[in-house]
Amino acid sequence: MLGPYAGIELYERFGSTTTFLVAASLAAGSVAVATTLPETRPPSAHAARPSGMLSAAALYPSALYLAFFFGYGGVVSFLPLFAEREQLGNPGRFYTLFALAGVAVRPGAGRLADRLGRRVVVLPALVAAGLALALLAAGRSPVWLGAAALLYGIGFGAGTPALMAMTTDRVPLEERGRAMGTFYTALELGIFAGAVLLGLFAERFGYRLMWWVAACVPWLAAVAALRDVRRPRG
Image (cartoon, rainbow, N blue to C red; front, side, top):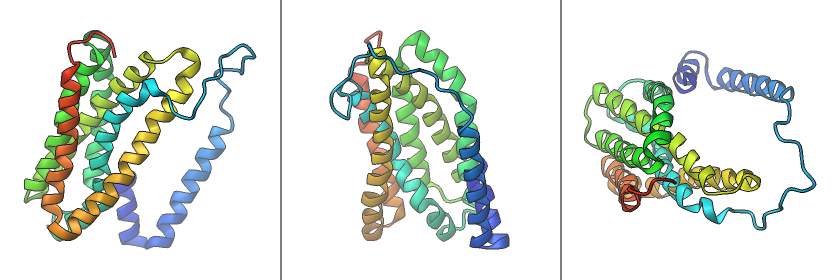
């Protein structure tokens, strides 16, 4: 939540060496804590062994999740450069507000997904993510940057638990590990594709048009989600 803002402050005050040493120390501490965690599901000799690396049943929610992270690939790669060029202040504030908004809405979004259905939450979340990227394209001040961060966090905070629940709804218990692997593979692919393709687009047409292109991806995914919004599950 505070990592991007704190990282930029550390870099500006103490340089890159200190920043990376602090990050490495925190990562090492996380590994130490992880080694103390118990196994939550002991292996069973009777468990079914699914074939293949990806879960076919998880592909639909994973594709929607990729749509969220396509634009995020541009945000993590180019927002600092964009903010500096447009004199929008410390871009770390964007990431902090984004994280705060996501944390704030996630519990309520999860409850809504249970009560109203997964797609009913996913649809407006995708629209919100696209609107946030459109605000980056149109904004001219730090206020617009902050508004985009909050809206982006709301979209991600609402969409993530609903899509995770949709994924687990679609697979049997013994396949959930593979399904979540598929789900998070989509996350990484979205960031990778967004960083590469949006970077090529920004190089040729500029950052603002790049943000508009990024905004269209979750909006197109919302159209796909809208087709099935009336289904009670998944």
